[in-house]
Amino acid sequence: MKTSYNWLQTYFEEKLPAPEKIAEVIIFHAFEVESVDKVGDDTVFDIKILPDRAHDCLSHWGIAKEISGILGLEIKEKEYKTFDPKSTELKIDVQDNKCIRYMGRIVRNIKVEPSPLWLKERIEAIGQKSINNIVDAANFIMFDLGQPVHIFDADKLKVESGKLKVIVRNAKNDENITTLDKKEIKLDDSILVIADEKDPLAIAGIKGGTKAELDLNTKNIVIEVANFNPISIRKTSKKINILTDAVKRYENEISPELCEKVMNDISSLIFKLGTGEVEDIVDIYPNKQKERKISFSVDFINKKLGEKISVSSIEDILKKYNYQYKVNNGNFGIVVPILRLDLNTPEDMVEEIGRVYGYEKIFPKIPKINFKPKINEIFYKILFARNKFLNDGYSEVMTYSFCNSGEVEVLASASDKKFLRTNLTDGLKESYELNKNNAPLLGMEEIKIFEIGIVFMKDKEQINIAYNNEENITEMSLNEFCKDAEISDSYNSLLAPSAYSLVPFRVWSPYPFISRDIAVWLPDEVLSDELVEIIKQNGTDLLMTEPKLFDKFSKNGRTSYAYRLVFQSMERTLKDEEVNKIMDKIYSNIKERGFEVR
Image (cartoon, rainbow, N blue to C red; front, side):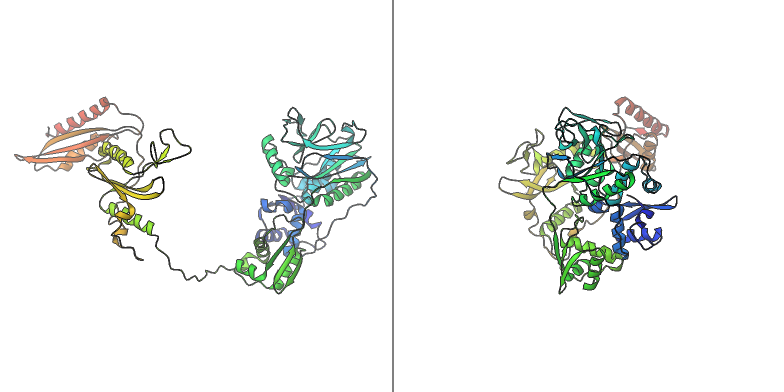
């Protein structure tokens, strides 16, 4: 929220510290200050008010009260002109409980004109455009006190019953409204509107309409100070895609008790700016906000903060923030300030006292805890089994828990996977076949895989282990497999693989591979490395793996070397023709060296 230093100063008789000091105080005890900018002879802070304090601190008054409490400066209440209101015939009809409180007041014979310099400077300093004295007064009060205010031209309201009437109701599905920024909004019966006896005048708590818009000819006005359900405001704002300063305040909830002060202040300000005749307030407030109390002890505060704050220090903090409280032997009972909707539990008071006391004064201390860790038997057994298989050269796989048959059916899933598995064997068989088919690409002579997972029976769940012994699958329970494992506080050698191979990860291709075998006679005095180098130099970048030697034998001073070559593309499916061309090139280079291809 943009906050003016000069505006804040109007709340204090005493001269405030320099803007940089104010920013520091706010940062360390209340909110993040995102920027401090010079605007003319003023300084403007951009303060990040989080949702938990938006209800009372999206205002200069709220920030002033924070500064007052933190620095111990006495805050003064502003004084406006007093007046004697006249009786009114204004009627307010609230038809939906999404409107928590609605206050209305007529002011007659006002004069709409440019704002005085002080008012114009105040609102323009925080980035608002000056419109006229009446509109600016409403904006000023919202940014000053945190409560939105709306003003209608009373003479533009449709009167059918003989008396001026404002209705708070749900819109009709066939209604539309043109907002003050000239947007056409289609309404429906989930949207709360302010209306006269014929048409909508405003979208409640969000945006006014053009029908009762003020202009230079406006003489009589209706002031609206109201409180609305925050969830309703948020949903409507999202639905119609309109976010205003009023929405920011309403959607985070404002105390309906604030309405009375705001109505009195806006009435006085308008009376000061445009003279006029002020009438009585009409106030519809069926369910008043209840008083809230919180009890806590100094021991509770200190235990949570890890600090020794004295009773007198806590009292000093409460006094600075004008809390009503009682204390007896270190036990506090407070009355929550009516605007502080964020304070509900003793834990909230821990945060409140801690931030004002100063978190920088609270030093972290590691507690002494006599704790002996307990071994998780299931985890231990899984680790034991896993690393036993890894040490034996197995690779771990994970297969689907869902399958097309079983004892436990799930509520919703793919049509061929409506059940939970009763064994690991079926999934491991599929994984074995898949890996077997890809053995050339994997560079594996033998496929050795295992899985540790849960199986689901009608009356129980169980952790099983399955692994392959050549092409046969063996499955048993984890407990049965680990029956000879000794569970102790210190992990033994079976709990860590005996060797690790650090292989850089390489993205695999989604396209199929093609394998080719080549066998070549080399004189015994020629090393096979020379043949491998010829293959690699001519295999192009489609040769995905190192040539794999799978056969070797010697005869009559020569040795036959047989290699398997695997070709694959990262971008397309290879054709036999292009692999054949690569193989022909390899054959040609081998023959040029005088070697015989078998």
